[in-house]
View 1 (cartoon, chains in turn green, yellow):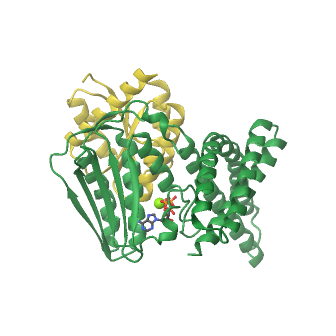
View 2 (cartoon, rainbow over the protein chains, first blue to last red; view 1 turned 60 degrees about the vertical axis):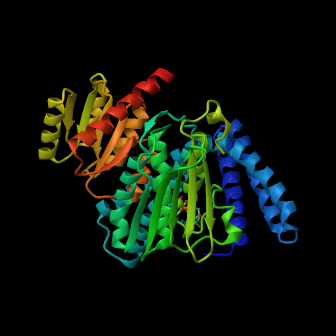
View 3 (cartoon, rainbow over the protein chains, first blue to last red; view 1 turned 45 degrees about the horizontal axis):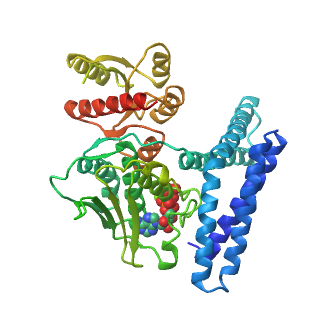
Length: 312
Length: 129
Ligand SMILES: Nc1ncnc2c1ncn2[C@@H]1O[C@H](COP(=O)(O)OP(=O)(O)OP(=O)(O)O)[C@@H](O)[C@H]1O
Ligand SMILES: [Mg+2]
């Protein structure tokens, strides 16, 4: 885990560089509109990183406001462009992967005598394929984040949905001696919501909790109906917790403290987008060293119009 | 709820035969195929509402098949069935637009219930268009 400021800056710079690359690629391949869009985004990212650099010297409040504003603008722009850029990048990625695999096949067929160099070439080919797959995970996440998947509203038995997802996580959790505790309020009313989207959120949160605990500990998932009749779900764990200076960033796209290749930092961003689109709210609380707790509140039915209000 | 059309995809022949038969007994128009590739072929030719898809199959696996189905026929609802619980693949499946991700063995009534909900979702979605 590297320092917070450092990770942020690095991610921002990387995003900027990636977007510059995408812009150049798009413009060269004749897709000028998308290219220019990517260029704007790249500029914006670059600007943000400069901000973060200067943040150290500034009082907290002041930069926070600027930062918020920037963040919303950036997210809005990103939503529209991400899908396009991800699509365009997916094609060359697929070709790179195919070519790498083909090269491997040709090598095998050529029956070249086994030498250390040959082994190295093979290793390198394998690495190319792996890195392409990583890049594709990222573009897939981006597409998912940007995709306006309109909720389809049906009656949902939330307790049952949670029991199913907990059972799915439990097997793997047990292997690392993590207990999954359920405190589900009986007799909850059915809610009008989107079950597959909720499953995605619950799985993401349970998976984060499992990763934070590592081994030996517990995850507690609870449901209840609050006084205002909304349904409240909490997922608490006994894991590493989230340092106070990081907690406001965890819902940002691409924010991750996990090793490269293990997390894309999109799980919570996607989850928040989903919960907002269902008229709900999601928050996180944590004291370092004492685990983390995520709280979702959902209306019995989404108010009309709410779907368009919040995708970021 | 009216009858709907189901395709079950699983490489285990015994399991496939049994479940197809039992779903037919419940009055559902049910077909079974043994691989992802065959599923895609089948869906090209035959209107289907709900697909029950095994995650682990030789050749094209469940996730790969799900991706293709959602690309070609986004309206079809897919329920993933898995013998080996894996959170990562569950997340992947849900992210790719599966309706549910269910562990084997699943009681038939429970599966039927999920299939009905999946079908209802398909109908609602068609009405929204
Ligand atoms: N339960 C938790 N305990 C401690 N930290 C958490 C917890 N959940 C999330 N975090 C922090 O928030 C970050 C962002 O989480 P998010 O789910 O968005 O991305 P990720 O898990 O890193 O990657 P991905 O979900 O894309 O695989 C994590 O890297 C981690 O630092
Ligand atoms: Mg995560």
